Length: 167
Image (spheres, rainbow, N blue to C red):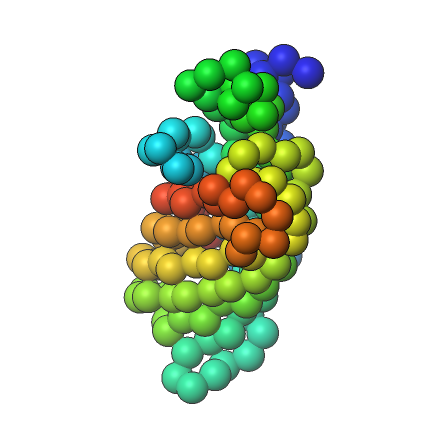
């Protein structure tokens, strides 16, 4: 499937999920976009969606579930072999936990993911997803790392910065 078609499909899915996120039943839905880097500072756009419902109060903060998906667009490599392994996009579905204090402030999270597609950066599952973020009411800045923890080579991983909106 051509990269432009994949990107159009990803944008359409993100728009549809954002429209659903406006419904009260999905009030803890988060949608975002950003950029991801891998070894050699090769960058690519990333789209992220997550449902982060409150599970319970915990130690002055809130423990939340983190169920989501991230789409890493393909990138061209520096040589033909790398370009073949990175030309197509990868989707990572993940489940985990987030802990934060209040509607504004620092939060941390971690979880496990499964992927569709393979690149040098995301060479095989499971993927471990770690998150550090800051939230200002409905807006969040998330720094994430996705990697298989050297369970399969190569293990470049993806490090991403995402700006997200929580409905």
